[in-house]
Amino acid sequence: VNGHLQRFPVILDKVRELEQKGLLTYLESIPWFKNKRNYGSPEGHSWGSKAHRIVAEQLFKVLQPRISGAKED
Image (cartoon, rainbow, N blue to C red):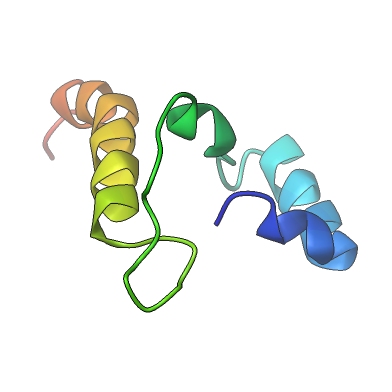
């Protein structure tokens, strides 16, 4: 959820370390929500179904070219 990882600096440092080693790709979700409103859940959670749809659409944009370009064994 936007900004939550910053609350845990030890975890964030480890994520950055793993990214530098090429072991994961960290994607910041905050830009995906620019000009988006009302994406919380009715129960008061930060992300509701609208937010999850936004994330899925953005992840698809990142992953689709990688999947399409992958070689089959």
